[in-house]
Image (cartoon, rainbow, N blue to C red; front, side):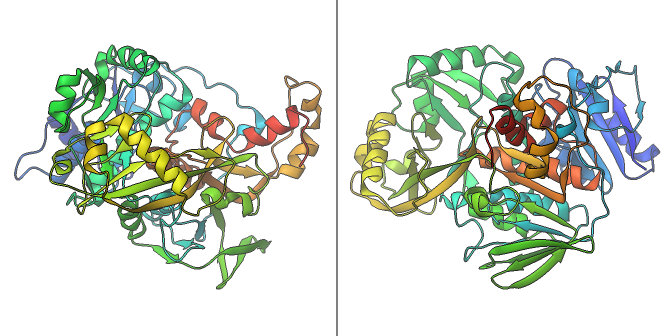
Length: 521
């Protein structure tokens, strides 16, 4: 049984240590609630317990918009930060009672869910098959495996991270709205968790790093958004406004625009993160293994592939652009978006770039003596062949972003990467249990005439099938946090995401949307 210990105000390190020593029940979940600015804990000194170092890493990118992802502080001990407004809705995250170390946070009653947005009852897990070994599939496998689940990853390509996750360098920062949108909540929750995973899984920093990310005021709209965000002083440890002169000093190259500086943002090699995630004990990865058919026999999924058959009680579809060809999710209204980036050999002058630059395009500091820059964005295009026209487009983006670097790298291009991203029509990921679309169209047909009509028929789900897909160009931030939520739903653990966010990402929203619009399969 889960035991939850909470503080209404952030405790001291000694206060946490006292609880760890006194409360022996495991698993133990610790909630650190706060108002206003998130708590910060100093870096642990030499000889300090391992959990103190993890506490520092967990809180360095804390934010006050969403609950953080539960992270393992010590064996059997899970910690998460919860803004007070999230703590007031603890019942949205878990039904377990809370033992308060100080004055309890008053609870609000959970809002009744629409039947098609509910989470199916937890079913016994006898192995999970994850389809896709990009960032979403690898992160989902990792989250399940670290809870002791045997995971089989099926990847159609020759190697993991071969498609949209195969870009040589991506940027980790959150392009958020100044308003409390679902996307802002998701991005801020995901930013801190992805940053934590990098520190935890790739501690040597060889495949990620840099002196932050500078998102430039490249037009009036961005400048206005940045001014609004800079007013959020409770997030000053995450981002702050800087002048062009300060931006140039940070970047190490001339910069002509003011910027919003994400001081803990980084560039990273996505394939390195994917590899580290898949290295978790309990994960078995099969490449060149395309899923051809899934059939349910005797309460198990029998998965027939190009390299034999596999069995699992649960199936998680993380196919990215391949989702349109996968069972159960192939008919969802997903969008494919082609993207191409370029690589250029570093020069003595370009090697002075210390921070990644972002605007209409981006460029990362040199890694292994080459920069990555781009990127094109071509909706409704599934072609992955290299295009000189898009390379010319990326060169123009670089010239607009930073003329100095464009001149330095003018004759040093060494190739690049072209792939297809998967997105949804509302630009939010598609995450959760998958409904039986045909049965839903029959059960909820009346919504085509009146979308507000109350429905009470339990949702017909495809048994034990989940998805984590459609992350667009934000997968480095959104896929890991969504993987943690997916694992929580499958295993009956406390939810990672708020009810509002779970509903906004739910796959069934797309099916219901089609019903309301009168669209048929």
